[in-house]
Length: 338
Ligand code: MEV
Image (cartoon, rainbow, N blue to C red; front, side, top):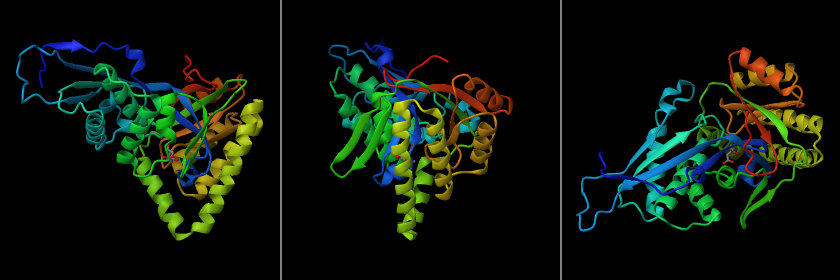
């Protein structure tokens, strides 16, 4: 639609951001109330809202409709997801309705640095960026908790039964220890004395978290004791991981990442592509490597000593994988330059 005249939203674009994330330890079991550690990465999604100037006395154009434009994702064949655009539309519609601005036509432009359907929290980051952009454009006031909660509702639309960890990191941009409880989420920001360098490698296989979460749920229904035992084991690794993070003990952290990956494999959310990537990262000097996020494809994370991390990333690059370098650190927001 042609909305004219367009006025640029009076926002600081830097504020309309939702952060991507990695789960360092504890994905999937976190859905069942066990602990997990997540950190923001230096890839985000930004949104901008433009809307027609309110012309005094002008009748609203009944034909004008809102539109959502996402730059870049369609030209990203590795992560192409034909349903993604429709889902993003539904998310934007839900947000506009919850914010009470559904009747005003707007143009929402979304600029993702994150690949989608890769386990890096793109859906939550998209929701947070759109919420922030609409909030600023309409001069609304929402607390950070309210933004996170609305993004959680969007995640329910996309994933069915999200734990709440993705929308929390997408909103607050902090490295956290997270646990979902009936009384609400327990969220603790982690103090990390030394930033920990991480290579993120993409398998190039898109995977929807909703699918792998559904598969784990089906397995849990059939074998609840065995699945709970695995979740509880993962929870113990998370506890050890928190202590290793606080001490800056990379070998200990790497070891629990490797063990966590094995248990995720037991839950059948790994894939041949993830196994190949994890194996290559370990052979090239990573202290720990595991799938991150939903699995079934998507992304792998590996940690190594600071002097070794570029060589791990290079080996993956040379083998043809897309990689990103990031750091796990105490806020502000984990955004570091590559
Ligand atoms: C997705 O980033 C992590 C999962 O644990 C799902 C969730 O926590 O909502 C697989």
